[in-house]
Image (cartoon, rainbow, N blue to C red; front, side, top):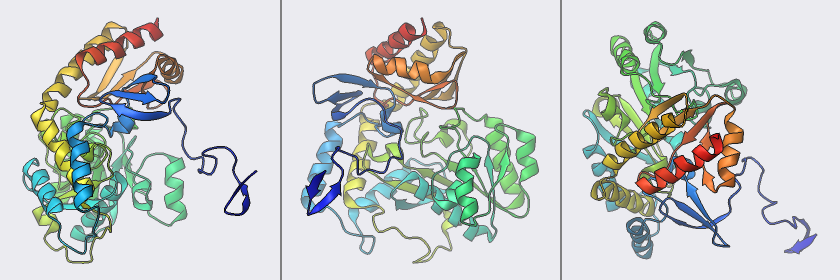
Length: 390
């Protein structure tokens, strides 16, 4: 055993002190460039997983890196106890990209926190507690978000904490959505494009049904865009792609290209009675993540990444179908390749070819590449997939 600060029980293996909660991909990156991860020996990996949809502008985009460096040199942090120009600028920039009446922003640190606060605002606004969610949905690991996430394994944590579970509606079932929402409902929470549920894009009819049911009973509609937002759907918000406007919209993951930040965007009427102390986050909207997020938005605009998302979606869809993939679901660069075989061996075979992809369920390969992925990189991904499927 190594002795560290007088302790003889410190682990001798690097990383052994980490709690083993995450399955590990077989890459140990020390550097990132665009769509690529690079190991210490120079081995390059094509990253079609994007750090779980986080690397929106690619790894280490120069403009984002520069914004982080410059802000860190001026002011690394101060809490939400003081106003900060970066926080105000980012809130204005997000609202400018939102469909009306989404007009008020609360910043936090993650997607789970963004969803937790959206649920809190919905319950405060309506004075009710019941939540309706969708089968296959994933919303986070806080107690409140586990209660609306699908799966007994996850909901068991919420049960033990005494949090009431949500009412579940089958995915894309319009009639069930109308039937589930009633006068006791505080909110309906739905991912316009499910991530963990298999990169499934909800139909416009289903999302409209959720909007209509909420309007009929005075409930709040929450769009969880933590994974499918910030341009990943081919428009800045997935709501913009389907033309259905929620009362609350959440985002995180790709918002700051890798620096942790989350945002809950609320309709003005939902936020009207919010008072100091109703919500809180020490690190919410700190200067460095806000600077990184502002730079991310600029890159998305200046480099035409929304148009690139739509073009690369089309290329990957057509390419996967040409390889015999039975079904391709999702929207933009959140795509699910539904195979006719187990997905895990395909994923592992792609790893052997230094291509990172995710899975979602037993037979789905999930693609979450940077929004900046190039034609050549998309073709390289398809070529590796073709090699594996042969």
